[in-house]
Image (tube, rainbow, N blue to C red):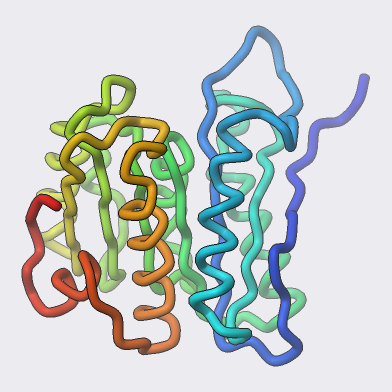
Length: 226
């Protein structure tokens, strides 16, 4: 039996980075324990986001995509453990003080929020996250968190993610952007989803000045539709 292990795929790795961005894919479970394929659609969707982040980082950010050890969310080994493994890999290579932004889609958004309390994590971007309502009580005190969710999502509930975001506001610095007409795959109006992830990562890790939706969030307009 082949042992299932998580893997990291590097988009860019500068010699002297100032921060790291870890991208987390979604994807539903399958019968048994199935290995994640680099060509499955949920994994491929993170490729252009990683590229957008790398360009925005201008050679100052490590950008890596995590391939989970198995598909879906296994009760005995969740994607959160894979994120913890990836964070340990980053710390080993670049030092424990390297600030990290987690960017996750769907169940990857859930994993990002649940793993975001790790000391190295400075910020979290949850793109169309699949969540349970009670998960607004996760320990993200002092973290900067951005939700980006399409109002046409029929897979992951926007009302659930909004409820979680409201709960998180009590302890974290939260922004919530509703994308009019956006759906779960984030293909329609993809520039909004991809751009928000890149802008939030560079703003929170590098102090970059950004405009658009993230510029509005950072200037204090925390809940709005684009």
